[in-house]
Length: 133
Image (cartoon, rainbow, N blue to C red):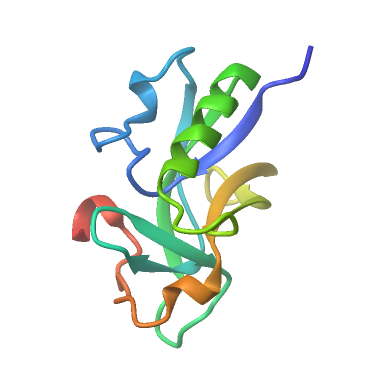
């Protein structure tokens, strides 16, 4: 049986948003809030991120980390597939992050938008979708 995976969620999958991950089944385990390096773009009803420091003055994406079962991972993949305008719209990436300052690094998945689709999209400077959508 495949093991549970960690996921970093930054947009509509965050608690209280349209696709609140905590309401999905089987329920994920919340591990904490953290931030990762990247730039967040506004796509109207949802954000997209590019990992790493893409634009000067921008660089932290606020999100939540969850432990997710293989069954729920399939649900998340299906949710993210609803938004694409093209098959290469989102790229599921494995990243290294820390759940707390000085904490041990862990591997987690994140859905990154293909950079070609960010052209002309406004940047969310705070990197926090819940705060500044």
